[in-house]
Length: 439
Ligand code: SF4
Image (cartoon, rainbow, N blue to C red):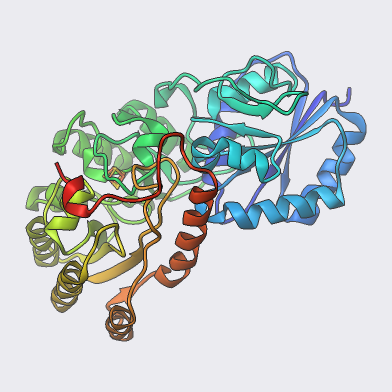
């Protein structure tokens, strides 16, 4: 067999595989005249070995990376390490995902050759057709021979049904993405920026196709990726329980008696105002999870308004009470250190955390991170004062609180420093007082 013209080396980190699996799902049904091969680099050393071997025979080698903003700095160091181990003129490192989309210049300066901007499926397919040559392909940022940044614009956003949500050919499975984009516009969140502020849902028939394929492969657990689980089938703020039931019923049926369906638990989440007895009963009827995740974010209505969450504290309490009454274990996401948060807001959040913990909920604590692409990208990093830390510690000792909120404080500080180093044109880093930001 002829040597491949193009080798795609995936920097395949076990913890973050989803973004690469959807690319493989798109690739496996794509017809192209390019002879290509895919290799998985599970460690920096293995990635370098693939690069060394492939670059000796292929016309081009693209090394594909996908990562979130908090990991960008550590992965830039890893990229340098891989380049030291193996490099050649026909090798290009391509970074995709939300960080590369929001901060393409930062990504190029950090060492990647190409930043893939926006949804990656169509961009990758075009790159494969062009044997890895980025010229003229939309969805990319790279430097030309003079060092100037070339931006080719966002690629077209396609319906989810156009591409597979995982890869049969390479046997790489993951929670199935049922909804992309989000009509809510929480100011700390990268989802609406990355995927647009409207929902695109995978059709029930297409979801069923995936579930049938999983069952044939002997897989038994169906999980979903969605920005807001009970929004499945909806076009606006309200939940669409008929669509949710249709989805869950077909998944339950498709995965068979030995299978399990998980909905509203990791890695999807439910907005508090969508929690209703009917919705919880649907989950009980069709799903195996006895826990759900509810996004609360703050115990202060003032902060929730400023974050444009679209719900208040009362809805959170109501959701948790209903969930407990229906026999669910409730995990509640909360963010400490949001922009403009004052001591009164922090106290309100701690009060809410204690109250929900007393009801039996577990608090998943986060520290606010000024994420690229979000309206709060230029906000100061989240910080949490020592007294809040001790209270939060007391709750974790009771088993009522968990999360990587301390590590996120470090990420937040690094992201804020990066935002300062790469100011957006016309923006100063000063954040307006919280009340002024609420409209
Ligand atoms: S936090 Fe959730 S509801 Fe808010 S914009 Fe992001 S995905 Fe949508």
